[in-house]
Each structure stands twice: as structure tokens, then as C-alpha cells.
Image (cartoon, rainbow over all chains, first blue to last red; front, side, top):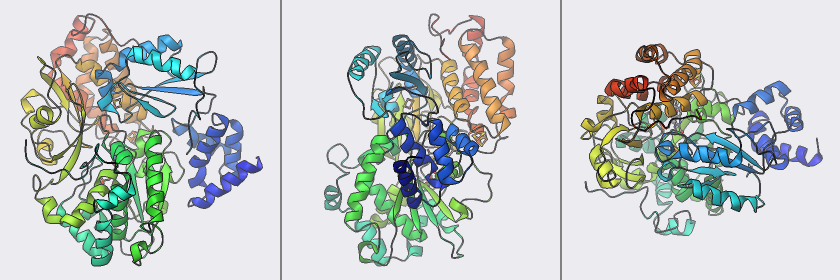
Amino acid sequence: MTPAREAKGKTLIAAHHDGQSALIPFLQYCQEEDGYVTPTALDDAATLTGLTRGEVESIASFYSLLFQRPIGKHVIQVCRTLACMLGGADELRAHARARLGVTDGGTTSDGVFTYEEVECLAACDKAPCLQHNLRYHYNVTPAEFDRLLEQWKNERPEAAMPAE
Amino acid sequence: MTPFEPVLTKGLGELDLADIDVYESRGGFGALRKALRDLTPDAVVSEVSASNLRGRGGAGFPTGKKWSFLPKDGRPRYLVCNCDEAEPGTFKDRMLLEKTPLQIIEGLLISAYAIQAKEIIMYIRGEFLEGYRVFKNALDAVRSRGYVGQKIAGSDFSIDILLHRGAGAYICGEETALLNSVEGKRGEPRLKPPFPANAGLYGMPTVVNNVETVALVPYIMTRGAKWFASIGPEKSPGPKIVSVSGHVQRPGNYEIPLGISMRELIDEYAGGLRPGRRVKAIQPGGGSSAAIFEEDLDTGYDYESLAAKRTMLGSGAVVVMDDTACLVRSSMTLVRFFEKESCGQCTPCREGGQWVHRLVARLEAGEGTDADLRVLNTINTTITGTNLCPLGDSIMPFLSSVLTRFPDEFAAHVKLARCPLSAGSSESAA
Ligand SMILES: Cc1cc2nc3c(=O)[nH]c(=O)nc-3n(C[C@H](O)[C@H](O)[C@H](O)COP(=O)(O)O)c2cc1C
Ligand code: SF4
Ligand code: FES
């Protein structure tokens, strides 16, 4: 483990009730640093918390915002639940898949964009909606999606999954 | 419209309510100071009990009663605030988090004083990055004014608030799954009993309350239980924020007095339907609730009236479907939600959700058979009521209710081998 990572881990444990309570915040921090939850991060988490590597992996796999595979710098998550569906989410999803050339959960061949279809994002009054690196975009038409895509292509985002 | 003065959303959109100076200039933290100075913890619990406040997270359990269940055995107690909002159609807690974090914090502090908690844990849904940042800034401001930390506002009461961000999982909104998640475990619901009041976070007595529930507590302190209890029906009084979405002209959050009719809510608050459209189905209380229909529009929007219609107020999320909506596709969307979000502990929920989704997706794609329809009509009893937590029992209510009311629409998908409402477009990307 790098000294910086060990120090961060110890700070998180001190701020929480015990080692395991700091596990998810620690993995969130590693994900922000490394781009995803790497095998090394899982090992480091096990060392810090005293859990087995298998336990850490099992816990991490439960949470949809912890990615145990490389993801793009841009993560686009389109809502597909009822209110968004009534507002045109199915059309938006079909359009987004075609534009990016991926299916649900896929990453573009250049590794830049990861695309996911997700459940209700608590923005049902502005359907259909999506999150880009956890930031909201509302009432997204296919044309608006194309405009956003161009904008993102020219952007250097802070982090796909910010920990803080 | 029924006369009513909103409290939780007052000034929203006009003032920056997340600014501590603005909040204090409008009387903010007056309720906290009053409680700490004039009331014993038990007196706060009594006042909240007398108000008949019911939890706004979904189950509608009386808040004062929940607080008074805590055993008086000297063990440390926790107050956990549930801001994991992910029930389909619900978007009120996110609004409160992003726009009015200070009334949540004040409510948390008073609630923690009432139950004499050792620590407050604020659990914020992982997707709510913006809300988390707003809340964190607000908390720093509150700390710098001495309202959180040691000896709050000159009293003997000390407490801190720990922030915990979720990491993606609807089921973590269920209170025991949420506690497991705070403890760094998989967010799987626990078998009850023991209830959190006896063995909650780290095995200690714990209260879990929804964001909107705690945000109401300061107003009960300053205006009194009588004021609160006088709004709306006797058994479910008070202001309530309702998230209205779907086929209405003005979707949004509306703070209403409980008990107004569904018609008033939809027509007066949410701007009614688009011209020429009729109500086909309404989900009145989140993705888990059974639908009501055009003939039910005079039903009161409150816990009892909706229960009498065999549905529920739930989280206060109203999704309106007009006559252009396909109910097979709507059902599929919701069943798919529960399939995806099942934690996997119980077989009926884990496997049932998958099979029902496949079946309804087949119907929706025009590939269903009469046998599928027969299975659909009997499956309710084999899934509902056989699970550890309410998620598994939420797969069928909407589907069963629309299947009973519109059997022909389901049958037509088999007969025509496509959706009768659209000329063939179907969900290819299930
Ligand atoms: C599957 C499921 C999801 C839930 N999600 C939430 C949620 O996101 N927010 C919430 O406050 N309550 C949620 N609840 C209800 C909580 O279990 C609990 O009843 C509530 O937080 C208690 O707070 P209250 O008494 O103030 O309503 C959920 C329940 C279930 C079964
Ligand atoms: S009913 Fe479903 S979500 Fe609830 S505990 Fe069982 S498997 Fe998990
Ligand atoms: S259904 Fe898409 S945000 Fe709620």
C-alpha cells in the first residue's frame, strides 16, 4: 500500500466507528483516485479493515456505484423507471445506445464513455433525465443528448465518481 | 384550493434557504433553542406524539411512538436520518437536501435531543453528489455557529453529525439494510425482530427517520402539536410534500395539507392533464403502490383514505398515466425495477422478480401467450407475503391492480401480437 493511501485509510477509520464502517468510504476514495475499484484497492481495503479479500469483494459488488472494472472518464447514467419512461426515456435510451455504439453497461471502444441504464434518480418531474458523472441533466431529448455529448467530448471532467 | 400555509417549502425559489444568515433571519434555530432551554427530552417526545406526526419515509409509523419505544437501559443511542430516497416517483427528499439543508439539521438536532442520542448519522444516497456537498457546507456553517458539537447553544447537550454517502442500492433505503450499509456491510435487510429500537446500529438502540419527518419537527416545536394536528384528517395530519410526475402539465413537488382529494392535487396543484386527455391510472404512493383509477379521483390524499382503496400513500409519490400510456409497458418498467433492486436473500423476490419481468416483457413485445396471461393472474399469491422485507411484496401490487382493471389491454397484446396503443413500437431493449 502506498503511504498516502494508508494514511487516508487510517484517517477514515478514525472518523468512523470501526474499520469496516470505513470500508465503503475508503473504496469510494480509491475509485476516485484510480478511476475504478482496482484489485490493488481491494487488497489494500482488506489489509486496512482486517476483512478477508473475499469479504471486501462481496461487499463492493453489492453497490452499483462501485465499479470493479475500468470505466470511462465520462459515466452517463440514463434513468429508465416509470416517470421517465412516460416522458420518453425509451426513445432516449435507444438513441444513446446507437450514438455511443454500446449496450447497457458498455464502454465505448476508445474507453472514454461508459453508458448505463439506471433506476429512478429522484428527478421524475424533469423526465427524461440522466446523470453525467453524478451531475443531473433534465428533460433530455435526443437532440439535447447529442449536444451534451459534444460538450463532454471537449471537457476534462474532475472525476467520474467523485468521493467527496 | 383548500386554504393552507406551507412550512417546509415556504420561501423556496425566492430565497437561498441553504444560507445560514437567511435561515436565522427567518427564525431558524429558534425551535432548537426553545427545546433545549424550555423542554425536557420527554416533553419533546410528548409534543411530537401529540401532533400525530407519521413518518414520511413510506411506512407512516407514528414518530412519537417510535421514539418512545427506545429502552431506557443506559446504552448509547443513535439517530439515523434516511436520505436514501430512491422509491420510483419520489423526489422530495432530494429537494429538501439541496434547497433546505438547515431545517433538516435543526430537526435532527431536536430529534436527537428528544431521544438523547449519542450521535447522528446522515445517510445520503450515493447519486446525490450535489445534495451531499450542499449539506456538508451547511453543516460546517452550523458547526461554526455552535449549534452542533459540544454544549449546543449554551446548553448541556452535545452531539455531532456524521455524514455517510451511499454507494448505489435502492434497498439501502429499507432501515435495517441502511444500518448494515453504515456498518460497511452488504445492504441486505435484517430479519425483524429485533427492531432497530432495541438492536439497531452496532446493536445499539436506534431510531431511523426520514428527512421530511425530521424537517417537520422544528415547526411542531414552535407552532405546537395542536397546530399540526389541526391540519387534515385526525389520524394522518400535517403538511406533506407530494412529488407529482408523469402525464400532468406541471410536474413537481407540492406541499399540501393531507386529506385533499386526488382531483385537487392533480388538477389544481399539478396543472391537470394535457388537453383532451383522461386519467387512466395513478400510482399514488411510489413504485410499490397499487394503482387507482379515474373513478377514484375523489379519494382523499391521506393514509387512511388510500388504505381504504387497497393502496397506500407510501412515500408521497404520485405518478399519473393518461390514456396514451400502455399499462403493460408501465408494469414492465416497474417489475424490472424490483428485479434489478432485489438484494437476493429471498427466493420469491429474487427469482419471482426475474420470471415476472421476463413474462411481462414477452407480453409487451407481442410475444406473449394465453398461458402467460393465466400465470400472471395466479402469481400474486406466490410472491406477495413470502419475503423478508417489503421489497419482494412490492413486485406485484401495481401489476395486479392494472391487470384486474384493464384485463383487455393485456389480452390484446397477445391477440394482436403487439401493443394496441401504438402501431408496433415495442421495447426491444429490455
Ligand atoms: C425497499 C424499501 C425502501 C425504502 N426506502 C426508503 C427511503 O429511500 N427513504 C426513507 O426515508 N424510507 C425508506 N423506506 C422506509 C424505511 O424502512 C423506514 O420505514 C423509514 O426510513 C422510517 O422513517 P420515518 O418513520 O420517518 O418514515 C424504505 C423501505 C423499504 C422496504
Ligand atoms: S424481499 Fe427482496 S429485497 Fe427484501 S430481503 Fe428479500 S430478497 Fe432482499
Ligand atoms: S423515474 Fe426517472 S428520475 Fe424518477
